[in-house]
Image: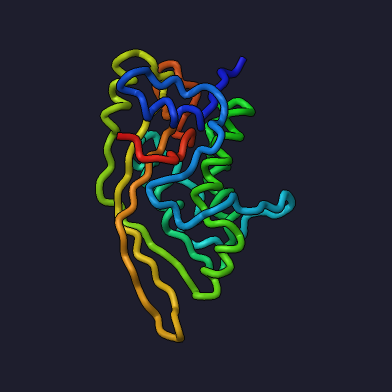
Length: 219
């Protein structure tokens, strides 16, 4: 029987991990808002249940790598989140890439939590169309990847399930857009927390799978 992994509730638990261990179980916390500067998303992007991923998907929305290395996997997830091209792709293209790699051990609640977290990280359709009108696209160059100190405490206390891993990824997002007929570029630092399940003793996976896209950056 699958373990119930309620992922969004894990975020709230991690915020007080110095007091209580994070269990990564539960339900989505009401009113949980994204932070660490998601790209101006104010509502989950709409999804067409009949659409399929495009064959001409550029590098920012390719499938995630099949790897056993948490650092490499977390970096790839961050690149998918931050390196978006609105000119030819839709929000659902990026959501599909991330959700296609969800941990197969997630419960229905856990899956719903992950879907909500991913949707909060991708601009909503209305905003996406405004970005597209400006020919907006971004690249992301990862700099640092590290295990949050609070997560290390969860692991050493024995509260982590087999294979659970967490990484913070920081890098530079460079956005190019057209304003009044002039192409402009802006850069800013972005950080995101990625939770995953990777191969380990007792973990029923042969590669890393997505479990969490943090609404906040876990310290």
